[in-house]
Image (cartoon, rainbow, N blue to C red):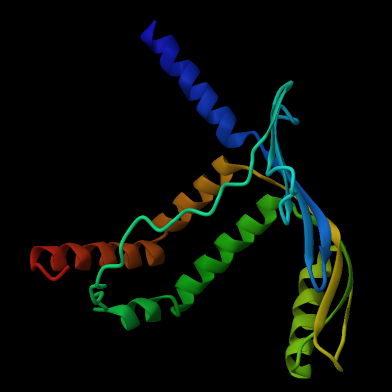
Length: 215
C-alpha cells in the first residue's frame, strides 16, 4: 500500500514538473505600460491571469477547473523590522570568484546552458513599434542585438530612432515553461567540471570562514 502511495506521489510530481506551463502576454509600452499576462497549466485546467497595472476591481484571476477566484491586491506591508546596524559583509575572494566566470571553459558552459534554456522556452513573439536612446551608438547596438535575436523568423518590426529617445512598442509574446527540463539542464550545468570547481571552492572557503569565526 505504501509503495502505491509513493508511486502516486512520484507520478504527480513528474506531471507537475514536465507538463508545460504555457504563458501568453500582450500589451503596449510607451509613456505608460499596459500588459496582460496569462499562465496556464494542463491545457488550462489551472490558469492565472493578471494585468499591469492591476485592475481597480481586483488583482490576479485564478482558475482551477470550473472554480474561479479574483484575488484582491495585497495592501502595502508595514515594515516589521526595525533597522539594525548592518554588519560589514566579508568580501574575501570576491574578485577571484568573479574572475573565474571569465574563463573560456566557464563562458562556453554558461552560453551553452543559456542556449538550451532559450530553446526550451519556445518563444514566439509579434512586436512592432520604434525605440531610441540619447546615444545613437547605443541605439545602433540595440538594433544589432534585435537583428541577431530575430534571425529565427519571428515577427519583429522594430524601427530604431536615432534622433530622439523613447519607446513605443505593441505586440504579444508566448511560449512554454517545463520546470523539469529546466531543473535537469541546471543540474547538468552545475555538475560540469568548470562550474563544479567554482561552487565547490566557494563552499570550501565558506566553511573555512565559519570555522575561523569570520562570518
